[in-house]
Amino acid sequence: MTKTVSSFYAWQARLVRCPLRSVLAVAGLLLIAGCSGPEAGIDGSALESAAAGDLCPRIEAVLRHSADRRLLDASQQGAWQVVHGVLAFGPAFPLAHDGAVSPAVEFLLGGGRIAGWEIRVGDVGPLAVVDEGSVTGQGHPDQWLGYLSQCGVATGESGLVGGLPLDTPIRAGGRDFTLADLLAQAKRDIRPGQECSWTLMALAAYDPPDASWEASDGRRWTTEAVARMEAQSEIVGAACGGTHRLYGLAAAVAAYRAVHPAPPPPESGWALAESVLAEYIDRARQFQQPDGSFSVHYFERPGRSPDVFSTLGATGHVFEILPLVLDDESLAAPWVSRAAERLVTLLERTTDLDLECGGLYHAAHGLALYRRRLCDRSSAAADPLSSGGDH
Image (tube, rainbow, N blue to C red; front, side):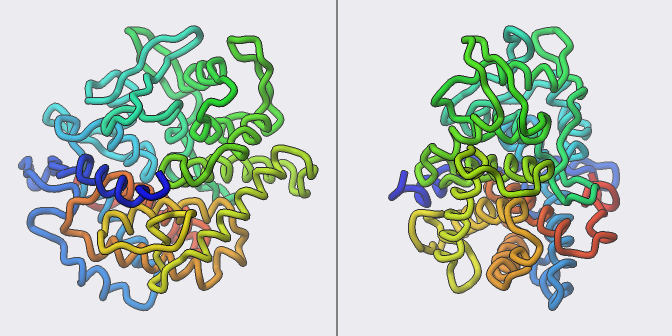
């Protein structure tokens, strides 16, 4: 994947760009629009100039545009696209289906029919089927669980991500379960050598850092052992340039540090995870382009591309990690601000384009986390889905 990270991303973008033929309810009518901007478009230059000189209002504007003007439709998009939207905007993220609009989480977890959403009943709970390489279904183990555990932005003082509560109902195989059952099944199925990036996100969100459990093969696991396994795994060749693996590690380390502020023991899995994160965040900074974007080759080497999808995808995926890893002083550093400004500019200039959903929603999630950390908390508390807009 080293040579082909950017080219693969461009290829994938063509498949899941969401010609996003979404249904917008406007003045009581159902109008067809794209997942980029509305057909009777919003002027991207107006968005940019109206918020010139202040990044926080510009972030708010692009987040609101992405939430309000890119409505997904269950008859047009797949579960992969919808779950990414939920990651960015939380449980209130809307989905058009069957001539109506309702929260996507309720539709998916309630057993709604959409391409790629395949949930079976496992030994102890529901099991999301992995469809490797799919552009509509779950492409990695526990991907749905991981993103549901990280969706939205918390309102607490920590500034960390939120996530659905464990008692959230899930309908599978004609039976009623909860998100806790989905987590229990994931922990039961874990094996050595498994890709656990998204599993680690869920463990960080729902279990204490010192949690331990027994898998179905009799092996004893701890969250630290999963973090160590992920930290010892390849980064550059992992999904999306390794950004998801690093995000999982970042979420786990943040959860650990919330309980244990002192540096972890040098030989621990936590120390290894922190070391890996420091190395690759430094690579991101070193490979950053003059315009503030991150390398389209992610953490392998510097590089840029004229393809906006590759640039948005790489910059959004890398940027999403930073609010979880960096302290306040580091997050306010000029190189991070330049990356945030470039990401906002990319979104402002593509308001009338169909965008690849992964790049769009990871960028939106990263900007929401960044806004929570750095912008005025009173304005940051306003959820782009909680007020205004036409759904």
